[in-house]
Length: 117
Image 1 (cartoon, rainbow, N blue to C red):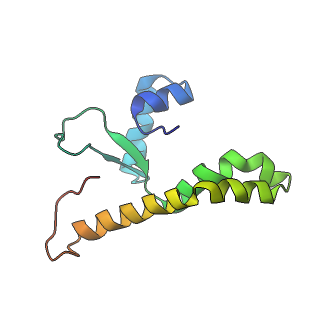
Image 2: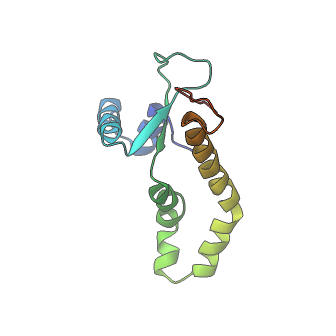
């Protein structure tokens, strides 16, 4: 399950929605996270999708933290199997992010203000 919207983050954490919004604003100001607006929507669209910017933190929250107990108990083969099962999806998402950045920077000979999925 992915927690990219304020509502889902709120449900997962059990925190008050205003507190979730406050923390999101802080993380946005620190550039630890960013948001995307679905293609075709305006900047005023309220259901923004939030993503962690740092690849190391993405890896940590996707693979290390959920497997913390197995790592501490030296069940490395189990952890490696879980990572291997969907690592191509993880690297695909990272590649997609890199391509969006390169396209915005003008790799195609033209720069863009925004690039969506």
